[in-house]
Image (cartoon, rainbow, N blue to C red; front, side, top):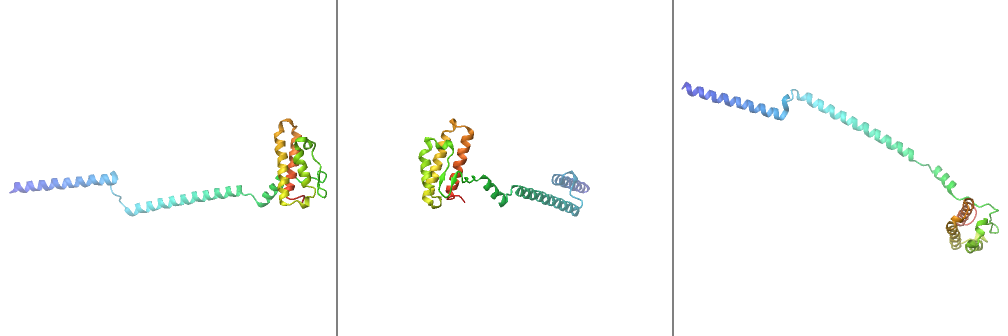
Length: 186
């Protein structure tokens, strides 16, 4: 009888030891060697602090990014006054009265544009500009086309021209075309 009791106690003891070792193995697998957290309230508090720190870091990065974007926008901003000034500066200059007499429509051509290859569009322009105040939309298109034809011919002959003559003639034609689009001097 004692033999069975001892056998039973040994079996129970080995069962308890096996259960204990099994629980230890599960604990190591789940929590590592440290075991379960001792103070779960402290762990939750530290996790909360980590989340707050990450949130603050995100907010700081967002603020820096927004400041950088605002700085770039301010840097890229072009005021309406600046745009108007650039348009004024880039627009061709109006011809002087000695180059174009608005009351008679007489054009004083640069020497280069008196050559034979410019004769047809030059005569067309002179005919259309006789009365600049009376230039209709249709005549304005024709006059502008004649000026563009002269510019194209000028570009085709660029190799045989001096730089100064080419620039002077091109600026003259640009100004003339600009005046035609605006229907005469302002």
